[in-house]
Amino acid sequence: MSSHRQEAVRRVAAPDIAARKGQTPVVCLTAYSAPMAELLDEHCDLLLVGDSVGMVVHGLPNTVGVTLEMMILHGQAVMRGSKRAMVVVDMPFGSYEGSAELAYANAARVMKETGAQAVKVEAGATIIDTIEYLVKRGIPVMGHVGLRPQAVLVDGGFKAKGRAGEERRRILEEAKATAVAGAFAIVVEGVAEGLAREITEAVEVPTIGIGASAGCDGQILVTDDMLGLFDWTPKFVRRYGDLRGEISRAVSSYAEDVRARRFPGPAEIYFAKAG
Ligand code: KIV
Image (spheres, rainbow, N blue to C red):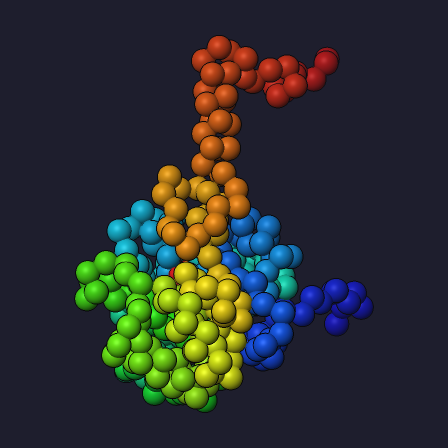
């Protein structure tokens, strides 16, 4: 056995996030690649390998086309890039809704092949038994209520949810059932502030809001949105950067330099060895 002891950095785990209920807000962002995970790791409690990767990285129109293989590849990259933050991998559309057994087989594969600490599932009331099934068998689960992007084809678009009446009551009940089933945290997406606060008060685990007000126990955004990579920003996103402008300026300078033969210069070339 090697006498060298590796300095182990303990990762944030599901019980740590669960214990943050009512404490300082939980900081979460999405990550899909190793270099980005490395940059986000020191600032975030939790990195979500969201199935939004399909739209953000692969140019898909929605998340329905995302596969388990894509999630595993990006999950592996994020695990390699990060050391401390908890890594949660989204279960993609079609990989868990069919039955608890199917969900377990696919979620176990995600956990084994990525080394991530948990999975996230979207589907509402129909998935409550499955959440319990997974948690009882050792797979930490994050729930997701409100606007559910995987239901985009049924809903006819990405629309805010539960602004009134029966839908509002249903989302509240779904959130409560998700917590009772054993989820360690729940993403609350695209709901009005009043409902977000009511869910947060009603459940014993942290709620992580996206487009759901500061009434939640934590926040998550798609990293590329908040960094300003796209020409369009959803209402609930604050742009903390201008990556689009930065990239455009950098690439334009590079193109001008190449065309004017200013790049590469003497500092950027190899010289033959003397003799
Ligand atoms: O896929 C995703 O990125 C998500 C978050 C935005 C919550 O589900």
